[in-house]
Length: 361
Image (cartoon, rainbow, N blue to C red; front, side, top):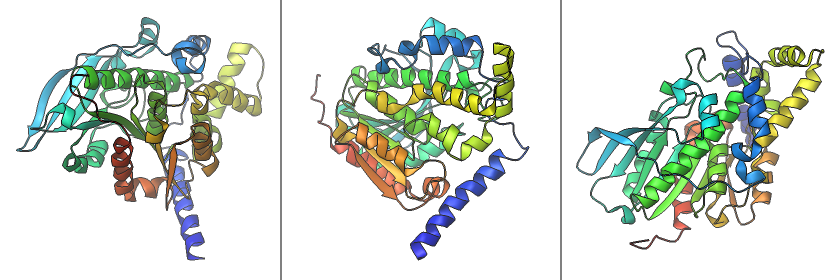
């Protein structure tokens, strides 16, 4: 009975948090400017470029060359920040807002170890995570395990946020697909840089919520085995925006009006919801290839998540045989706040299931 009551409490906390954050007039809803017009048309037409692993081969990552500056250093570790031009192809680059053209990263690493003696995990942003700080806090205790942390600032977030966007509330549906595509490209290129230019022994990618979806996509498409660690993540953005509590934060009427303007005919809300489902099905990770080493895939999910239902996590596990699901007690918000140690344990365990890179490889 106590366990049931706590589960209801955690789930209710997610709904209360969502109501305060998304149903008030404090900030606009997601997609308040509609579908994105020609940008969405471009992304739908070029599905092989947006999420190429669905219907074609993913182009190999290109080598980026970040420019670094040191933020601080101690006797045993140092934190650097870097930037580089996003490696997306010209069509995607032109669709991105100018503010998102330059990528920014933070890199926290042990100081006096050779790269082949270390591992590094790239941490991707969840919805609303505009800074490096939260993910650096998650990764910092891993220094004692000789695991470095690289944090990528998402396009449309932080200093890369478009001028007219408030907070994390993306203006158009096309922005969500652009964010995902750009994050995949940038992360894959950073992993390639860590591998080929630095020679790290083992590599991984992790993320919370939306960041976990992107981590799963990167792990699926990356040409080499890496640890893939999605935390509190659905199998598709459909779950978040059409089924979970974020459906209350979606500008359905704006999408309906935009639909009607473009089709010269009225649309019902049900038709709009179905179209959004169809568009966001592009993000269905179960349609992506199985990662090169599925044993190094560990999902961490919450038992009473108001944002991510259990069936969504289990669909991912079923699609990727030999992957592992670990459950923590709580909801989406409480697990994010209380279960950092479980996320770190999954990172350590996922990396341990990879073979150490041989010197000179």
